[in-house]
Image (tube, rainbow, N blue to C red):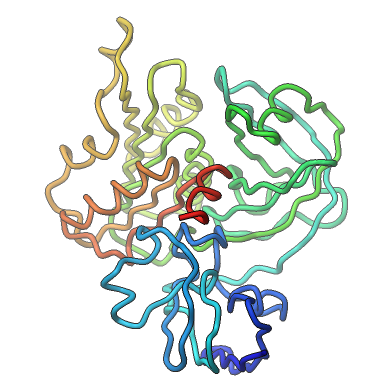
Length: 343
């Protein structure tokens, strides 16, 4: 049995097959529907259901709070129609549209950033540089392996794409990157995706919080903001466990010297050596709360482990920031996604 779905903001009607999600139907029809993880974790496809009924597959309450569901909001990626429906994604400030591309690429460079993180540079073999907004991500598919999402760490318009990959125990793709990936290996790259991108028209302070490889999209966001001359203060907090997990610190310290608007604050959650005296300690979210008593008017860009991202969004709202000004990208592992789907 099919149901008719009216996409109000796009002026399009589609037939959705039984058991198919609204987002899947929209993407199959080449509708540029905002989305991120497509598994109920990020909230990028949050939408208003104007008419009809849907069955919501399991999702994270970080992506859709109970109060929001009570107000008629749903996640398009988890919404399976039970009747004809009318729906529209929530309005996005500074909505951007980039052409979705599938690109044949090769590995151009591999560098060891930390004991468990590799940065890889990827050359696009067919066509111009990828058009994207800082903070977005792409899907990488290595031969014989499942696709995985990674955020761009480079600036738009550059000839190479840069990604940061952390080794995850049991992770097929991360194991491949860390142990077997070689220069000139082929990889397919699709994108861009994601809505946690830099809002270039914003004029208030920027709070950028990165945990581990969450530094990749935050690096792109911060460098772009500086490059285009955004004048407001930018506070970059980088949270890791200990000193051996820090990377790119020299680069950001150089940027601090060049741009008076930028502050760079590494924060260590575990203390284990004499070098700790050179850094802030504790949870990175608590460091922000220590430094600020009012975040009204700020934009927050947050990327990294889910618990860090969720905690930051919750605590920052207590200091007056609007939920819609928190642009969050939680890096869920495949095991975490599977666990959520089973709940």
